[in-house]
Image (cartoon, rainbow, N blue to C red; front, side, top):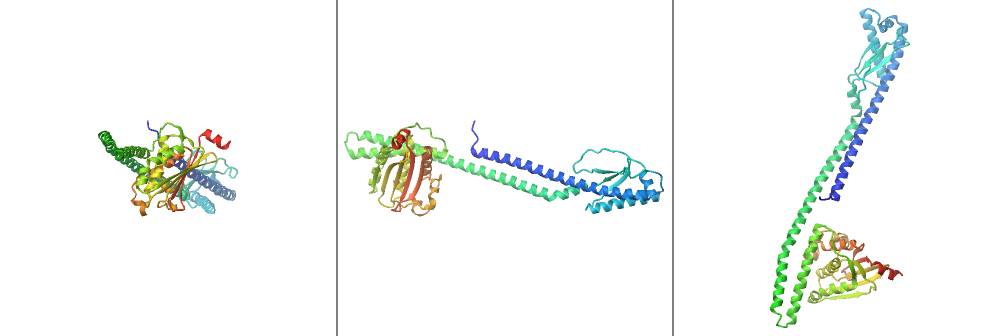
Length: 420
């Protein structure tokens, strides 16, 4: 089963974080609504308390009010008059509390328990005990538009939270869609490279076969030049095979499972540079070796270090406008070996020094545009150098060429010799 990639895990955690933010926002909105409701209830209770005092004072002075409130028989016009008077008292106290809502009320001696409601048509009870001759008389007040009023109070907060959540959610899904589109493009690019490289396999095999056949046909001629040219064809054929495999590895981004062994960098540099001698001679150039590192043992893959050194030499040759002069030097410093490859080529602008190690990046201006390549060589070099805890950097030389510097930790035994 394929393991999820880092991007998939990041997208999953982002989605979970979005859900958490959504839950927090909803919880915050509900808390804001609850606080608004509590504030509303407190305001209504304050208004009813003031109305209770005013009604009690009126009842002490007016027998008709006392009779009406206690439920005694009274004339219809008196009953209507007292209802209007109580309504006026309640209305004036609500206005003082800045409550401008329609309401209904009644005087009752019935005890009714109402279940708690969130933004419901909750009724408010105010006892008149101690003010009348009869106990258990209450004012019951209801607001039919209470829910709408409370919603209006928190509408701004709710809309802001809702719009923010919608924006974040839409942004997330747009980003996820773009990510999937980019991922598909990367996969298509990788498939294209794989197909293209596989197409190289047949001609490479044919070249190798043809070179072998020519070698057999010319074995009896004793012509050193022919043997030399055939050797070059075979060597370059092998190098092409290595480069094809290199492109496949770079495009697949898979780990390289090569056997690790003890390598002598100085000897390896001599071997790799010698394989380029025919090409350098044909261009009228030279390769100078200044291998001054006394300790050059590295624990790593021969294949990896062949690719590292050959890529840098190959770059130096490709980007030379005149006869290439390549200086390869090694030295020791604090338990490390420092390898520098300097050329007299066209150089690299400082603004591209970091970008040249990016996958598929190629400088598309000036003479560099005319050099063929896939833009993955230096990416692979950097990846392999970092695999061995090394560092690679680039700078301009005094001759306006390029200097690549690689710093690698030596094998443990060599470190002890240097520092000891």
